[in-house]
Image 1 (cartoon, one colour):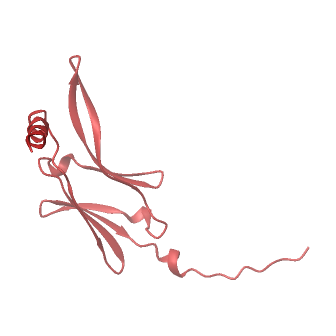
Image 2 (cartoon, rainbow, N blue to C red):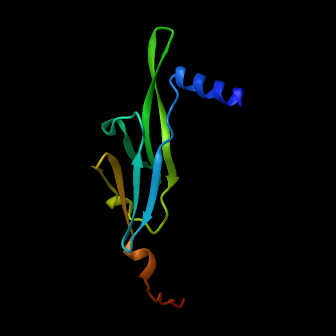
Amino acid sequence: MDLITSIDVLNTVNGGVSEPQINLIHYEDFREIRLKIPGIKLDEIHVEVHNNTLSIFYFINIICTDRMIQLPRFVYNRNVPYYIDISKIKARLENEELVVNLPFNRLANGYHKEIKVNEG
């Protein structure tokens, strides 16, 4: 028990990071990510889509040899599924939470086309 208490105290003294609260909610037309990070201001959180990966992160400032270095702390970093319309992903602040809306791609589940095979 003393070891666990010591680790917790050292983590806190050395600028420990609180665990984020992430909720993924499924609706009929979209998915929603709701996020709270204790101790981090909402306007410090970044949301990006890069190469089909949705990333939610903030920066931790570390001083090393008299220089400040910003290291990203990723809270969410996953590939966007094919059934999400990447071009329509939006984020907003609501009631002390970051809310990321992931609308479904309507063409992913219902598109059908017969392809005629040409001879010769």
